[in-house]
Image (cartoon, rainbow, N blue to C red):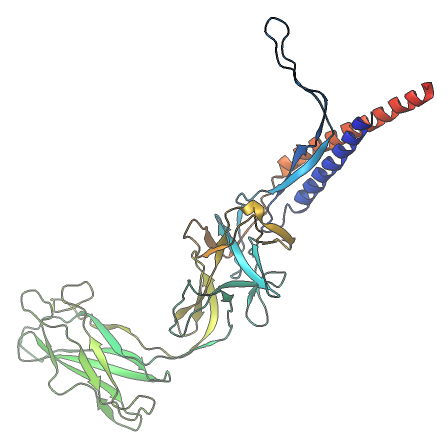
Length: 422
């Protein structure tokens, strides 16, 4: 009789664990990045009351063993790593993983893994979890490039950081210069651009194209105001460009060198820049067709200094800083970890996990590569708890718990009757 009592007690304990797990799941139904758990049961050792008997032909048949179980135990608690619903928040620090993988974080010299992407910036500009763990990834090197094969570092987004200016080295032209019949006053057209010196100071440049008496040939004169007074001519005397009279395309796309800047102390000595023409026949090329003028500067590669005023996180985890001067540059890239056995990870609270001998070592890489999921900026992954399933399991656990208590009370009654009749 004591066997039934101990078996029922083990059933009560096991189903209490199931109730505890269900209660925790329901409590976290609205917790960002929470993965629900499920209790798995296994039976305990058996007492063999009778062994198996082999059949004897013509005499007797075989008999099966007689075994009496001693109860149940919790074999494991499995975590459900199914994808939770992606919820848009509009918060630029929030980050959701669509697919497999974990964010890598660090705190107190220990490494953790999480799918909870409700991140924020601390006083140092570090990207951190609500628990204060710093998100890990790769940062640009001295050349501005990100080496995703290198060691992980804290990801920092320095708000207000200044971006260095860049001196203009190339000015690119595009558009059309109308054909001229050769009669009347030769037409001329201008294109203007603001270039930048080494410290981001502005250099206004005017480029004048004037038709010449030579058919299909235009003179080119670039000028810039001299800060000390007057005007600097930047093109050599007699600089021209020519067009093929049949196709209207430039006969040469060689750049024109602009030099002779005076009164600009923030330009290096002997400084020059290129006036570039796209290759003839391309959509961006300078042409000589009938019609109106559309000659203009299409781009220049200099820019002033600027301050960081925002950032975005791409699907591959690249954090791109946006600066007030209209420029953007990579500030870092978020690392994603995957494991051979997610179920082997150890839960340490705060929606964080740590690797164990049964999870395998973390395999680090970028989002969207090597089977890792992609990242969704401005969003979080919601809890994957299925409330309907949990409520159903709650009824099952409650029924099993009550049934085991009934076994205890029934066994107690039988024992009491046995004592009274002894």
